[in-house]
Length: 473
Image 1: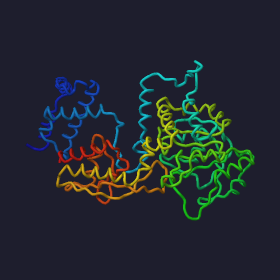
Image 2 (image 1 turned 180 degrees about the vertical axis):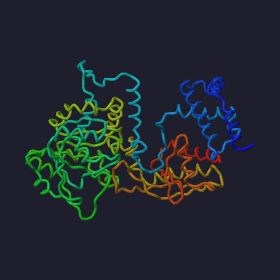
Image 3 (image 1 turned 30 degrees about the horizontal axis):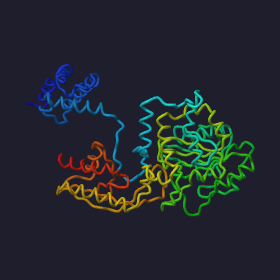
Image 4 (image 1 turned 90 degrees about the horizontal axis):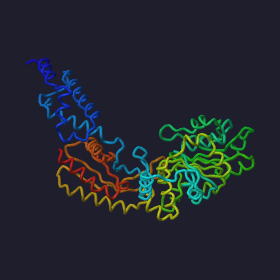
């Protein structure tokens, strides 16, 4: 039989959609699959098989067209269709605030509060003491002011939104003076000049890339200057022959010329990380104490909470920002507020915050603590007892991630894995397609698992994934 004739016979063997649906209806595995999903999957499987048959370059066998083989493909398609796109993953990369993996893990208290608020009605915008409509910002304003020392506070959906809202409120149609070395771009092509343009503010650059002086700001002030803006270089650093002006000095100029001063901290923090042997980052409290009129920062980076843009500062300016119509477009929902409030309450006790907020805990983990976890994983994998599996304990560095602490290398203990007969890319792909997916990194032809970002309950899941891989080989 010629090849084209064989493929013609394969086309005749393809069952119709209605027949496959009828057979599928008798199988218990399809009972919980919505009919619309099942119909779509059956059509997709049959169409894919038809394409393969018609393509002389693609291999296909008669058994691929059997009823059982087709139903297996339909089952896989249906299961994929019913699986959520957003999944839990195991972060083995060593990047603590991994933007692609959702940044900060929430504290248990925040997760519990989200569940409580999500599963019932709440006083989101209802003043229980007065029995009238209230403000959603009241849920977190007092505690933000207590922690930061600011007069007033509010929260929007993210820090880019916070910066946009503040600029639009304070400096629309006016000049905003910024050091040239602070015109940053962060992930997702968020650029300060672009946000400035959208806000209606007029960018006025001063200084050079590496050096900006107090006189540069003062000489740039004109009658239409509306704001002095300080932008923290969260995701990069300029070293060597450098100079920059402190917020405190900018505030002195602002006071002299009656111009407000704003600082965008990016990855804001309430914790002085230098106390834990890490690099010094300016804290929110320090920025507020300089007298800055407005300070903005993220909720889901070094703060360790949900995605949010937090604005703190002086009451008169915050009142104006709250009245801006853009505020409604950028406001956060009840679940974010529930998570943020619970996270902030942990900061009332610094030691409790370090222990309970996963981001802070991972950043401040000692090498010895990480090494103990690495030893436990090493022993679990050794117990698989497969000669093809080679395991090494390696000292490497973790990263903070999330556009924060760019110069910080965190000493870490890692497990490096090589599987005889498999490329490291094949191992990485298998782990990435595991349930739950395990996202590691590749170095020196090894699949690297960095234990800094591995949670205690994930060690056994990693062992199970590798055990399953060897069963499948």
